[in-house]
Image 1 (spheres, helix red, strand yellow):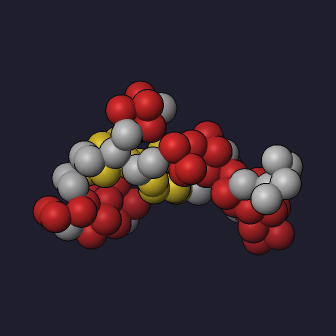
Image 2: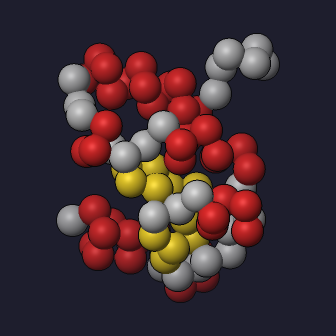
Amino acid sequence: MPKTVNKGIGLDVIRDYLQIELINTYAMGDEENDKDLLLHAGVKITLEQANPLIKEISDYITPSNDHDGVSYAINNIIK
């Protein structure tokens, strides 16, 4: 994949197309391949089992996948 292509740039393109302000964007990830996505989001969410480097850049850490971390994020952070 070209170095100029990543999840963060994809989020930027969608955000620009839909005219959404950065502060109103949320991203959730748990591994290093999600780093650019999180850095391009207004609110950064990770799961408890996330890579420690990803946890460091996060605004919120939810319970793990085994404990409904995505559902927790939707119901308690995003909603």
